[in-house]
Length: 210
Image (cartoon, rainbow, N blue to C red; front, side, top):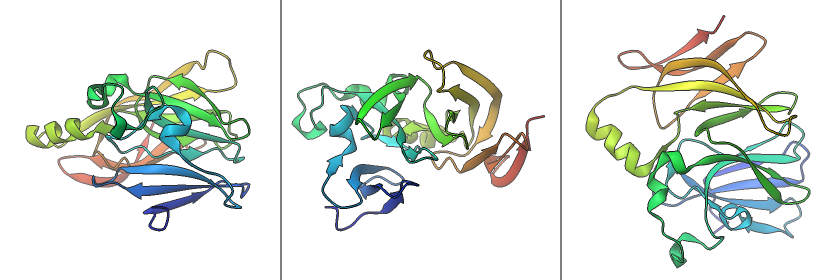
C-alpha cells in the first residue's frame, strides 16, 4: 500500500516521513509514519489509538524541529475500523474529535485541545494555530452540500504547548471559509491570515486581524 502514496511529508530533521494514502474520499487520507531508513512503518491510527477515518480537511503537521507531529483524531480502542470492536458512529460527530501531539522520540501522544480544524505550527514550535471549523466529517460535508450554504464560519486559536494545561487564546472569530479544503496560513508578525475565504464565492485574500 505504501507503493502508491498520494502525498509525502518530511520532518525537518530528516528522520521521518509521513505518507498519505487515498482511501476513496476526496481530501482525506490514511497516514503512515515511516522512519527514513525504512526500519519503522506504522499506521498513524493504530500507533495512536485514534482515528481520522472520516475527516476531511486537516492534515498532520510536523513541528519545526521535526520532533513532534500534530494531528486531529478521535479516540478508539486501538483496533482498526474494519475490525469494528468499537462503535464507529461517533466518527461522524465533529464534537468528538480532538487535537493531539505525538512525540516522535517516545511515540507517546497527548490530547492538547478539543478544537477541530486545519493546523499550523508556530515557527518557534512552542504552540499551534488551529482554524476551528475548517475540518468536517464526511457525513457533515454531505449535509453541508445539501444545505447549499456555501459558507462556514471558523475561529482562529493559538494553543500554548509550553504550559501544562495547554491554554488557548482566541485570535479571531467568524471567519468566512470554504471547506473542506482549509487553505490558509497565519503570520503572527503581520497579524494577518492569507487563505481561501468565502465572500459570495471562494476567493483568495489576506485578512488583517489588527
